[in-house]
Image (cartoon, rainbow, N blue to C red; front, side):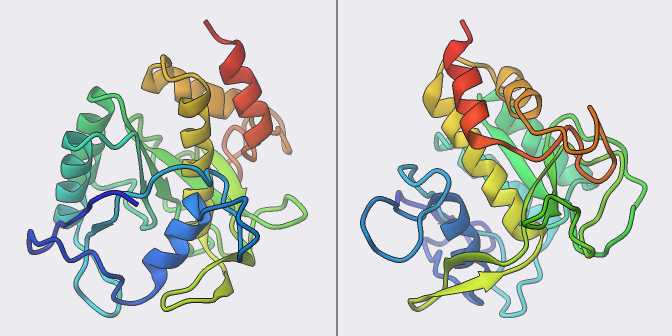
Length: 234
C-alpha cells in the first residue's frame, strides 16, 4: 500500500469506516502468491487508499469523489476505482477527464437497481455491470447504453475489515475486478495511452452476447486475453 488521502476533510485518515472499501480493495489488489487468504486480479499492484466518505452508512458526495480523483491523478495513480454509481455525474466526469489527461483511467460501478437508468456512454469513465459465475447478468445489476464491459460481481470472496474473508455481491466488486485488469494491461505495456488501454480491455473481453449488448457492453472482461493483447501492441 502507498500513501493516501481523505478527500472529505483533507486529513490522512483513510481507515475504512464500514467495510465496503476493504472488500473492494481486496478484489482489485489483495496480495497473492503468499498462501494466505485470497488472491486478487492485480495482486502485485499497490493500493492508494482515498476515502471519499466519513459516514458509517457509506453515503458519498460527488464533490468528494471528484476531489479524490483529482488528488489521485496529481499523485501518480494509474487507475482509480469508484465502487459507486457515478457515471452520470458531471462533477465526477470532469475529474475523470482530468485523470485521463494525466495518463490514468477511472473505472466505476454500474449500480445495483436491476434497471436501465437511461444514461448515455461516458467517454471519460469505464462503467461496469456485474455477471454471475455462469456469465449471465446478475439480476440486480444495472444495464444500458452506458455499460462498457461486464465483470464477475456475484459471491466475490475478498478481504473483510478487521481481518478474515467473506463473499460480497454487487457492481461494487465487478468494478474493482475490471480495475485490476486495467492495472494488468498497463503493467504489461506501460507505453499504451489511456484510450489504447480501454481499447485493449474492450477488444479482449469475451463476447458472451455478441459484439455489444446492453447487459455486458463489449463483453465480460478476460484478464489473460487482455494481457496477451497488450504485450503484442507496439
